[in-house]
Amino acid sequence: MGGIYIVGSRNHWGLPIEIRVRQSNFVSYGKPLNHCCNMIHPKALFAGVLACTAAFSLAEESDLGPFGIGSCYTNNRSAEDNARWIPQMEAIGLKFYRTPHTDWGAVEPAEGKWSWETLDQQMDYLTQRHFVFGGILIGNPKWNSQDARGALPINNLAGWSRYVSEVVKHAEGRIKHWEVWNEPPNFTGKDQTPADYAKIVVSAYDAAKAADPKCLVGLAAKSAHVNYLEQVIKAGAKDHFDFITLHPYEVLNGIADNVGTEALFLHIVPTLRKMLAAQNPAKADVPVIFTELGCDAKKGAETQAQALIKAYTMGIAQGVDCIQWFEGMDGDSGPMGLLDGKGTPRRAYKALAQMIKHFGQHPAYLGWLLLNDKDYAFVFEGSKGPLLAAWAPKGAPDHVDFGRTVQVVDPVTGAATASNSYELTVAPILVTGVPDNLIRQARENKAKPFPWGGDYSNAKSVSVTMGERNAEKGLHTMAGAAVAEAVVAYGGSARAGSIPGGNVFIVDPNFLAYTTTPIEITAVVRRNEANDNSGFKLVYESTSGFKTAGNWYTVPDNKQWHTVHWKIEDAQFVNYWGYNFALESDGSKFNKYYIQSVTVTKLDPQTK
Image (tube, rainbow, N blue to C red):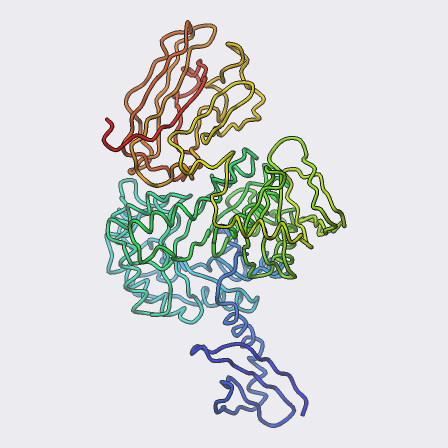
């Protein structure tokens, strides 16, 4: 009989759909297999067949995959904005887009007057380009109270609820995921609290579910601000969300700068789930989406590409449902794009193309291992079988012997080389033909804590001792062990408090993450050789955000080492800025001191 058959999509009841176009007067369309069909003349079908197949392909891909993309404001106001760069995203296999422009003021420019044309054109365009897209519930229209401008619209919850209802109803069947606001507490009022955001969330959730019971509503936070989410849930948002969105730029910066914080990045989702299990057990396993994550191209094209590969590799490994890289093309947020402002691809664009090719749209994480007991490696079931992604910590290249011939793939160019060994550096590689013994090791490690210089899950204390050779035992500085400015004063046993990152500390998340338990932080310090007046305060992550422990500490002199102690009962280490505590000197005037060591010790609850 001849013709075209498009089979395998599903209708909104979840039944398989077959589109059949053949050389006859009539064709069947939208026919559930083994069910009766409707009939339509071919001329009526062909006018919309491309749009239909695009929509059906979206239905096939309705489950999010890890490879997503997002945009700044100026590249996302309309279909015309998107057309400048979206085709290049589609060309490398990207399918998941953060959101068209669903801002309250854009769709209700005057109270009670709805404007859908621009949004509809944008949704049509993204659909034609085979993208699944979410939506964001955000904004304060010009006609709302001037006092509410630049803030959560808690002054007009009725209007907010009506906006949510109308936009969700209008996009029903096209937008499934709706995140509430953009990275709060950013873009909220100066004095607005987690309780204010909770009111916005509850109102949005109720209105959205009434308009489209099948939609999903997302709770949001800036960075990896898990303790802000906890406060929002406790303030009333409990059970009023279906997924979580985070923007962990700061944690990724440590990866881009090669300071060895892979374990920290890998703990973002586990820490979040620990909080959810404690505060909202019914939502402990909700999907997690990084609706923004990126690396500034000013760090270098190679650095940006490497950060992207590592971010997606470790994001998939820890169970992130989708990473919507920020951003597709440079716009109003600096040089963050896969493309520059003229549309020229950067190395990160090429790297993402190779990742999608080799990982596939829905890779399965098999587990992790350390090559040579130190080099990071992660194993996945990729598009054509087992796939290993690996890189070395900062330092000299490390020779890795795979024990058999494998294909080593450059994740930027796609060039593959057959070899049984490789000189591994901070630049990641992909490996196909992964030996069975490495796959087995990865599977065995999957459920184990990812080590950061050892396993400190059951340790009583962690510490770092400064000097020419840093000794990091479960406690780390943002400067890392390879800081060139390691101080040789006092026999090489200290580091200057003025060294960038040398006074900023990260506790191994396997030792302490989220759980609030009494701790003592101890630092051993002395003034510099000139005996300059110096001092600092200890600032740490608490249940209410960053706060100062005790008072300002003035280092007495340089005659001997001095030990200072802080006992803290409300620490809540979640690394939302990428670190847990710091010794702050309020600028360079008072940081004329040396640090010999810092220790964090868990105290028994009754210890005071």
